[in-house]
Structures are given as structure tokens and as C-alpha cells.
Length: 141
Image 1 (cartoon, rainbow, N blue to C red):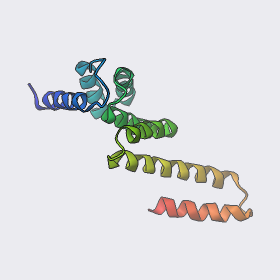
Image 2 (cartoon, rainbow, N blue to C red):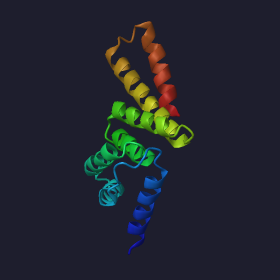
Image 3 (spheres, helix red, strand yellow):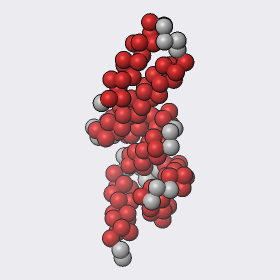
């Protein structure tokens, strides 16, 4: 068996073993393998569809929610990304990567809001300069 398949099966077993809820529904490792392969290949629409099937049957899988959050960020669906990262935090608040990615997503939302506000506002408006300065600070970091 090739190394990637072995890693994916290992991840599937690890995820299945880490579930905090009773295992009423089993994890379909074939779908997980397809999801992980699509994710690695950048086929995000396919990966999303597979991961959604997985969380539908196994809603307590942290890593699957985390991957969905990343997919949503990459596809510009920032509100959906926030919901996925919130689910990660709900499932495992001790894991920093969910918190980190949610914070980064909220920063992206703030930048988008400021860009829109600067584009729509009159430059003579006192708030315009304040928004411009904040936008510059966020973008320069």
C-alpha cells in the first residue's frame, strides 16, 4: 500500500478513535480518503462535498470541521469558515489551531469591511481617515 493511503487510513482511525460521542454511525473511510485526496489536490468543491457527508454522519470530528473551515476561507466564504472554526472550538477548545484560524478569518473579514467602507466613503468624512489608517495597519502586518 502506498504511503499516502496508509497515512489517510491512520488519520481516519485516529479521528474515529477521538470522537467524544458514542459511535452510532461509522466513519466511511472511503469517503474520508476521497475527501483528503481532493483537499490535497486543491479540488475544494469536491473536498467540501465529501467532508460535509462525513460531518453529517459524524458531527464530532474536529479535523473534518477544521478542513471545512480552511476550504471556506480559500473560497471566500468567510461566514461559513467562522461557523466551522466555532464548531472546532466547541469540540476541542484546547486546540489552538481552531482559535488561530478563526482569528485570522475575522481579520480577513475586518479588512474586507474596511476596504468596502473606504471605497464607499467620502474622503472628506472624518471616519474615512480613521478607516484608511486602520486598513493600512491591518494590511501591512
